View 1: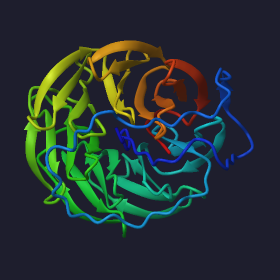
View 2: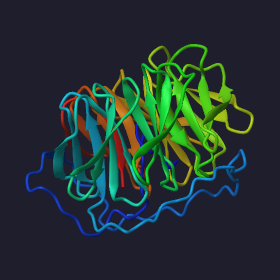
View 3: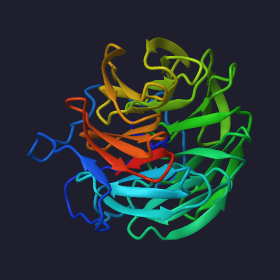
View 4: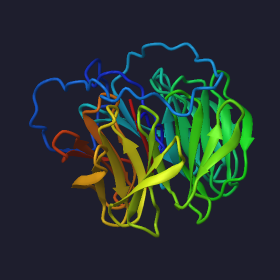
Length: 361
């Protein structure tokens, strides 16, 4: 999945490269057993294409290759700030003040911009990922939570929990272009790899997952029968992995072509968010109550490992090269780094209080 925000957003460049940090590390780290440069995954073996057919007309904006250390961003709801740490060395880069109850985080595909949602302020701050400077502040709906950035970088989508809506922002000029209503207690959000459809998790019984047509910014379908909190999509666009929310211990797999649930998977109690690996072979679900991540084999839709992370994990994301996964541990004020090959914990990084959203590039 190319997930953005805890929603989750990621931009594909390797973990190695020029690195910088802000001197003081707040990391408790276990040295990885691997000493060679991580292997970049070659991508999914499936040749399936996005379904439904791409009808979006959004034009990608120009991209640039940033000269940055690989980064992980966490939105810290208790600290009103955002922590940035090095995605390869797990050392602190900086903490940026980003507003009241900072929550969801998204990263632009070109690596230059971050989007941090402020729940209490009802806004999103646009930051320069190199300096942390706030470039713009845009008003959203009431109690915005999560963000997903379209893979082509043209649009940002923000769920507004209390408003029951999604705010659509043009990322070329940081202005709102639409508000999609008719949702309920909406939380997780993701965008298909062809930029055509946006999938929204509604954490209210009876609402399921709403499908937004990105060309018209209207609701075009629903996955019924689930109460959803987190959501992610496979790279080929064929399947959604849905975290069932506080009332269940279930994750669900839904087909994007039929908009039906095709599998129910028992994970940990109170699953919160999900992520899919860039090669599409694994899905990951954060389990709030036991403090764990369930690892799912997407070929069998069976849980093949459970990783113990910090207390009350909310966000989970996978680095674009597929080597490392990261969680935001709300109850611990930390972020856990795990190896996706061995499903073992490599490091625990101290963040601000109450981290929720997480994104990596």
